[in-house]
Length: 264
Image (cartoon, rainbow, N blue to C red; front, side, top):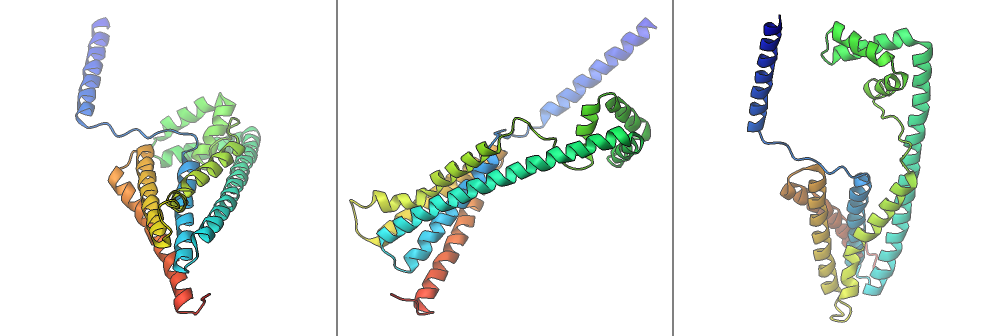
């Protein structure tokens, strides 16, 4: 018996060693950066660059002065930043409240309808490929730990993550607001930096175009770094997203001025 057990153990170790060698052959996928506020930074940053430069494009097409561009640009930047931050705060808080209420409901279902709830979870695991015996075993183990069973039902069946008590919606809102201001300032910097060197609004607009393109590319690279994606593809996609929006804004401003007759 001991020899048989030893032989089984040896074969198991050899099998695991072979699997490990096979796994070493393939390259390990890139590991994404697990930042808590990644979504807020990327979303707010991209929206800020595109929104601010689109505004500058439409105003430049309408031949507004640099002072007008700066005043309206920064006013719009701050107003949109506050709106974005408050929107993030409300949506994050609502999502958290919904998760709390859903967990309370799931707890009641597990406590008062234990049998049917276990059956539903077993069928869910079967649908994922488990056989009946393994699915029943897993659910029976979870049943010994009420909190784990509740969280598993929320995640597996209802597609909702359990509420995170450490999550603070106001922090997400602050990150969104800050990211919006920082990235959205990039297109406007040209109108400030070039003041001592030129009075040409065209040159300042070209400078804003260059800074916006640079900011979009850097944001695309940062997004690729965070998500473990291809740097070049992410940068190009992000750049063209901003370019299309800016081109649309400039075209509308030019059309309203020159075709629709909305001139000074």
